[in-house]
Image (cartoon, rainbow, N blue to C red):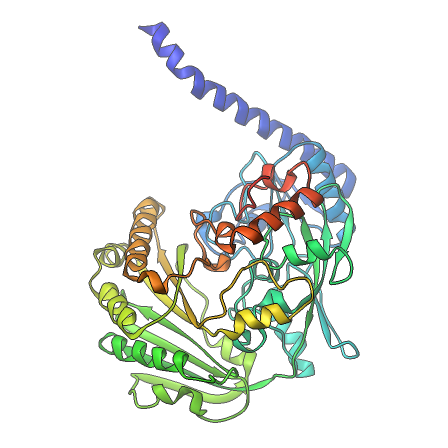
Length: 493
């Protein structure tokens, strides 16, 4: 009996031994990195800074204890770190702002090293070229504070505390997206550290294949240490934030349908709708990228009477600052794309109002569910194709009007993690089943995707094959697949 019990334990003992070996290897490499780069650049668990840096991630679902944290402030230091980690076969994670709630997207446990780009946060604007240079560790509030001085902006994040790197490498949705495409479509160059430690500049003329692949290709190809983006002379806008009662959800969604299906839609108009069934409210944010009061593009909403309203002409960054930072410690999300219709919006409204999954989340300590409705104009795909001569971006977007809905759940206790994840997954599947075959869109928006969703596969067979070839060319040993476990991965050839 004892022998059979021991045999049954062998796989578990082997796993424990392997984990201990990996952890020991990571610690030795951390010591090596300290010797090579100094304690100011490599933070050990004994360092007083370790606790704060390791928990900068937005959601506690991602908090882990890496063997050490590299905090490079120069591209040369990133080269040294990556080259060492790949040579020693040590797993690592790469963090920009740490906004993703997916556990491994920007964090790692004691078997590996976290590369935090928080000190690679320089933001500059060149008034001659009209280009902005952004470090991956900058937050969008830092970007806009610099660009506002020049009365220009970029196609960038809508939430000020989000990091630059993760948003841009995932595609990036912006209030300027209907007009100028995704954020990635407006990048003119990437400075990238490859798996072998080389530093390359990917542009339309140099490393063209890598330039294309980074436009939605996530962390599969290297560590980006600088982005250069086009800027646009947009500063003052008209913005309106309106809060409605839950009983008005269907009426607001029908107005959304009318807004996004109007012919020759005004591309300077953008909006996002947050349906919060757990708090019985609907929050509508409208943005017009010119200082024009109550533009006609939003006429479908003006007859609705909100519970509260704030409307004004203001800097675009001021509008973004109206949204307070989330206070709940734990988050997860899930996303879906479809061609909208009035019938589908009605069905979605009824589902969110009656779903037992919403009730499950609502009954948890501080449980909150937000359904974020994001209308996407057909010009988003067209703008991406026009943006450069290397074949646009990797996303494979259809040039049709569509909606990207994101289900976002927040809660308090770690013990409820599995319960919330299951509820969000089931609710997402229910919405998916409401979508008629003619209205289905394969694309999955990476910046809102759950780790369980196959984002790269949604880009289409041709784009996936092309990504595999680029991956093989720049990372032939698959270091950013084998060692960087988090994030959406390009399948092997």
